[in-house]
Image (cartoon, rainbow over all chains, first blue to last red; front, side, top):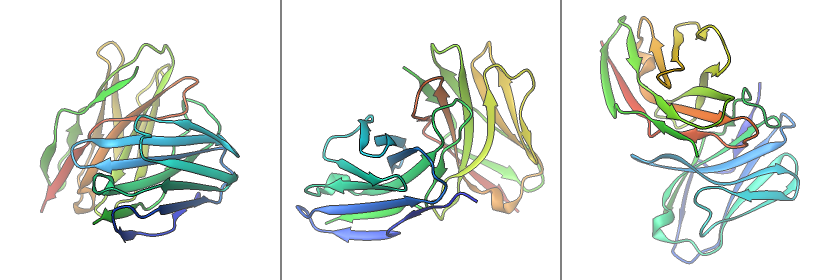
Length: 114
Length: 114
């Protein structure tokens, strides 16, 4: 079974703090993704990566950065957390591009910024 | 650009009855894939079913089937014999050929009543 794990289920941080969200997948997938989910807005893509050290902006990259130093690990970084970044963050992975390759998701991290 | 529309924010269904969750999409890609995901209250996104744009038959997976009407650009999810454990958010998503990312709808919250 594909397993995608995220470092924390719940996280509380203060405004201005630097926040790291870690994601690890164990199925040798090339693609990894970070989404945020807000009520009524569905899932919105923040960043994705199709290879080690490669990254592409998604729909809402402002205020975020990412790092992919190893194939299995994809980190989301909030350089200076703000209250409007309070959200559910979901990591996903998939095989290399194909219309039929579903994405496998981690359990999510509920981040609260005070 | 791709767009997914789910017009039902919430739905109720009696246990053991069938329910249809609506999804319409818009894309200029001639080849694309359509996905349905389930998100229980625990937060994890669970892949349910996939339909390719060139598939001749509607996809089925156990109690889930996808009513794919290409000309109408609709990909409705049908859940037969609803169970209490089906209560969750359901997201429709699509991916175009050559695209890395999934585009998600805003979701439908399904509640199964005993």
